[in-house]
Length: 134
Image 1 (spheres, rainbow, N blue to C red):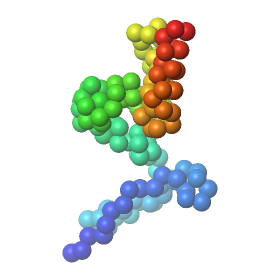
Image 2 (tube, rainbow, N blue to C red):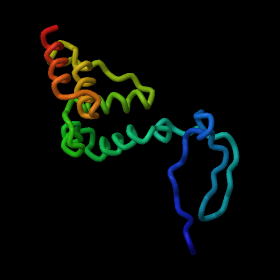
Image 3 (cartoon, rainbow, N blue to C red):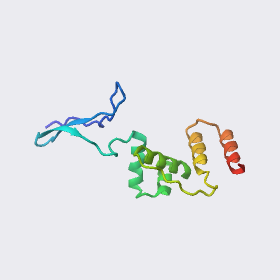
Image 4 (cartoon, one colour):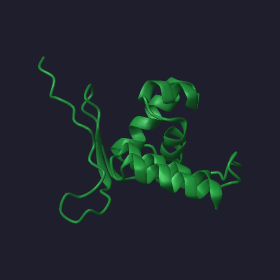
């Protein structure tokens, strides 16, 4: 018996960009078909980057330091990715107290921009120095 390849379920219409609605489910074994309007859970609708982070987060049992090691990025970058995943799930990201007086979100954004190549190291250093002196 030849198996049909499985592809990731699309979640948004390629034309309009609007969310797609699941209306048909089928058992590959029995052939039973269910038709209706089905609501996927919030995890099924995650975009690729937050979904991959969630997989890593679960694999390391919620240990952000271990996620930092696996991803090869700084701890603030891991925290920023964690917060983006929470936002994508529709949860409020907690405001964690930071050692820099609560301005950690700004530092996270600077380090993430540096990692993505959006700013150069000198610009990042200047912005981080301004945060410390501000």
